[in-house]
Length: 96
Ligand SMILES: [Zn+2]
Image 1 (tube, rainbow, N blue to C red):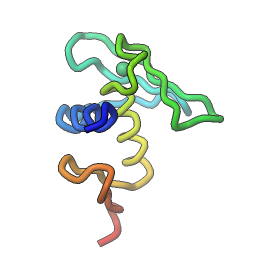
Image 2 (image 1 turned 90 degrees about the vertical axis):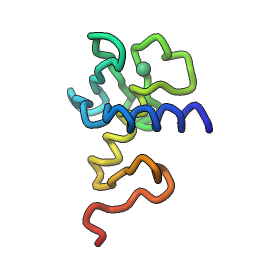
Image 3 (image 1 turned 45 degrees about the horizontal axis):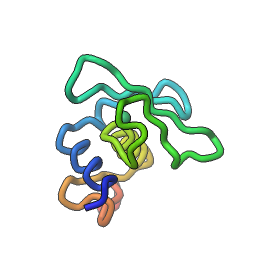
C-alpha cells in the first residue's frame, strides 16, 4: 500500500473527509485526528492536485488531511467513495 493509499484509508476510517471545511477555492481546514487543532490544506489554481498541508507530516508524500481534502473534493464532484473500494470503483451517487 502506498503512503497515499494508507492516508486515504485512515481518512475514510475516521470520516475525516466529512469534516473538511472549505474556506474558499483552494483553501480547506481539516481537524487533527489526535489533537484539538485544525490543519490548513491548500493548493494553487494552477495545480489543484498538488495539495500542501500545514501539519507535521507535510514533508511526507501523504497525510490524512490532504487525503481528506482529496476525498471531499471527489464527493463534491458527485462521486461516492467507499472504504473497501476507494480509488478503484468510486461510483456516481446518481448512477443507479
Ligand atoms: Zn496534514
